[in-house]
Length: 319
Image 1: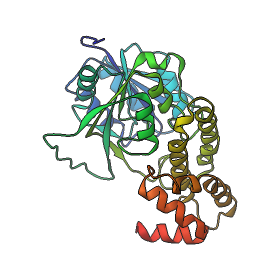
Image 2 (image 1 turned 135 degrees about the vertical axis):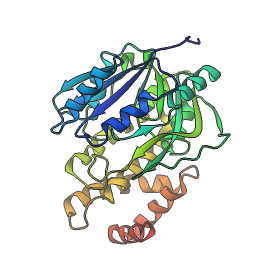
Image 3 (image 1 turned 60 degrees about the horizontal axis):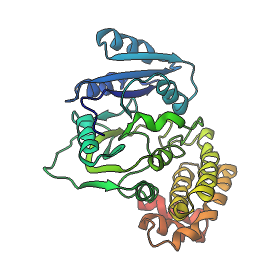
Image 4 (image 1 turned 180 degrees about the vertical axis):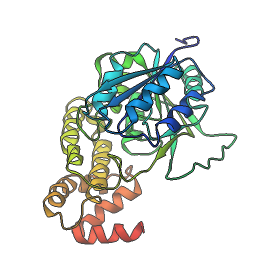
């Protein structure tokens, strides 16, 4: 059912982003759709992020601030989910930006296709965003199973929490994983399976800022091994409750393990071996899956030549 002039809750977790926070919030305040509540969650920042958030809230009555101890993205988003009052929810990372039609586009998709979730493409940037908008982008709808398969195969969109608009009622029995890493991998697919249909556009409306000092940047840290706990939870749920999604799920988990494997330094043998054992669990399934991404199948095939050769090939491919 179409909701006239709905309130949209925008959740922005913040941790040590004093350099980027105002830029992010300005992109939200400049939306063509302005019936918003913006919830900034200061996740125990040790820089001036919390102070900046409070200053922004004083200047705009649509902004609310939660201050809490540092626990990670999942906890931060859940803190906001507990107090949201909007009809729809979107989450934006505090070092990223969105186009000025980000929310308007999502609402138009939801109304046009009578969907519970709308999804868009994103652009990765490290300095300035130079985005030239085309006149037409492909769009459409997917059933819950089609959407999750598409997402696990990393085709039209991925498992990220952001670049999506959700009907708030989907979160009634769902919260983000409380691991330090990959909290959205364990959550986004559940929201999609709970929805009636998902609308998508290939238009990039979200701008993902690539920074090396972020949790998801290129440097490995021990917290990234949370992927093992998350992957085990996803595999258990999919295997027992949604077996038709097993092939797609294995492709997504292999990609997740490869991503972190390439961040580990070659001389870190313990963590390299841990991740490699998990790569070996899925590689055969991915090679045999004609629906898997070409990149994933190539990576799986190369892995049979060993860790050192695989790292050498991929490091030279992406120089």
